[in-house]
Image (cartoon, rainbow, N blue to C red; front, side, top):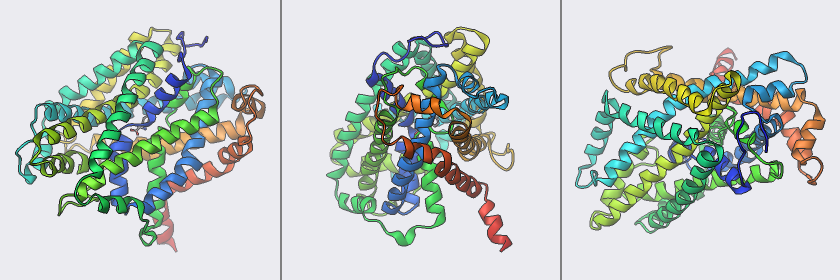
Length: 464
Ligand code: PHE
């Protein structure tokens, strides 16, 4: 397949779906989803999350697929090609490129932590510690000026290496190797977790909804989580879609990607909550520390008299996190890389290297904001929190909103129909539903999320 980034596209349909699923499945599923579920009361949150996943995030992802596959180029050129001469839209592509730098810079910091934890699990470093040690260890590690930086650079180097190898040899092959291992690890860990004492308590936390706990904030967190988890709003999947073949059914295969992403999130819940309930005194709403402080403790305590299992469980879990993070960071780098490759006519290698180096520098600032630069703040936030705020709470909703407006209102409907039906070859009964969602439902929902994130509802409440 020819395309403007001088790269062969994904060789197989499976490779394309796995690569897109790899972008979607990441720390958002294994780290952020259990955190959000835990702090939002469990099953009721999950039900609302599922609704938003399939009614909002998935259609926007399909919209990104449509733009990418039709545009056959990097984000910016794809928007330019489809805007029918409406000049301003070509700059729309710049938003995700800038966001790509920001998101990779801070995501790679957490991805680096997972690598450190995987290595420590491999060296059996968690064995024989007291409960308080895990929290102290994490605080000492994340605020260390050097150790997290070494892991950050290693993650960026791995991401760069895979992206530099190209679409088929790097991204597709990486996804084809890592994704199946990830599924096997997850399945094994779920089975182990379900056999722990009190696992049923964790299960009922996940399955028995308590709607009395649902508030407006719960709904909005669920929407935000669906967005982040499916990588929607930054056009990473738009870039991947320019490598899609013409036989990909955007709606059906988009559904597969969203289903894989959702299943991984739910299974992460099935690993984490039964494990948390198996030790008295631990709480499912421990927040972001669940994965780095609570879980190493859980593994050691629960399997206290079976050290081999404690070792295997921890190692598998952190390796799983590393792989999930890598398949996502690859998509972040690829999006920015494709842009500079096309715009300046440079090689994939040089473009990916340049982006990685800039992300390395920005990443240092993010990493140090947990330690020696803790007091260096912009708008009251350290660099890590600032980047996360800008990406997840500002650029993602804006990017998703503009994608819907662009495809629903600016692009010629004939193009949209032709892409969704593969030039009329597919009967696509869901086309009108999809079009309705991206024209009306999704933009309205995003405005609601956005107003909440900016605290505008609080301002409105205060006014009345
Ligand atoms: N979806 C990824 C995750 O769940 C994160 C991501 C966000 C990836 C934005 C690409 C773009 O971890």
